[in-house]
Length: 506
Image (cartoon, rainbow, N blue to C red; front, side, top):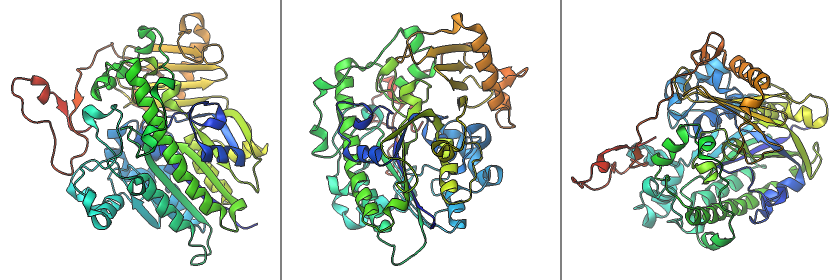
């Protein structure tokens, strides 16, 4: 049998509960629904490190953070240069060696920003630029500069951030010129190249949305009535904010005092952005299905992490509540997988390396499990799944264990622990630690085993998870995200000390 095409489609910061066919009765996602009907939806899929850079290095290496050494966004500055030597060949390079034509389009979020991750064709559309040189080198920004210079004056092409991070907006660009449309256009071009290159393709299309700012273009900005959006799900503040990073992160992006009305407006624009991406996805799926090898094409749709959107008095990600770490994961391959099927076994982003290489006929699971083998009935499900976030050996470190109905969370800052039964308490509002000491000890040991690597070992002490005295970090603000135009702060107001208490980038 001819090797299948493999197409990975990635969104950024899309919650697991935002697909109509999987139970969301408000959102409109006809093309994600189309993928659900075309294949298998993994309904208990997770990111094992719920923030951008670590999740992306997990996908391209098939390794967990304890081996990549990337536990949060800044960590990769130190680890990425030696990544392939420590973790193995990047996925795109591996697929190229297996006879595939490889192309990558969209957000890669590497360190350095233009790191070679193995694609024959790689077209960047990064969400932020640290200097003018990066904006000059970005393929999407170059498209705007050369093809549509009337919009090149815009500093932040995807919408305003900093104090506007969670303020509902409209895209500064018309629909056809947005980064999402650009990515879909470039993907369609690559999919049309069959006559020019007979090799099967491995494609990676990475959308920037629905990551904040929530700024869909017209008419998607007006698709959803905020009054029809549900309010955030909140519990006791002592449970919700046991992880001190949550209130710290809220303050960082100016989100510490968002009320329910504001939260509903944000969610309406967030849903609008997802529906817009869904329409872009539809054009990509049409291009796949226009080819004669459509049925022998494995498509995987996933995200890097979710967004709290006010649940548990929290915004952003970087925590282990479901809204942050549980993700959508759809796989379709008509020649090999059933349609409109569900898989409730634990899956994660680490499995994707094995999905691609197994489909290519050279299985290499690395730290992942055999997800295709599981779906085919020839592999056993994983008993537990472990997540890690934050630099080991610091109070920032956290770990999660998912097993059966249970989720265990450890926070090094204060040695705090949480245990939730996701069957009886899907909202994660009741901490069951005190009633289940034996189970807590079992999960604590599982988390310690998973981090026991040279790069992760600082998180351990006496073969157990290391705890620190609880401390509240000094609150700070992000004053500017995009530095390409030399803007780093607000205008001077000497009487207001808050204008100098912040940072340019997280």
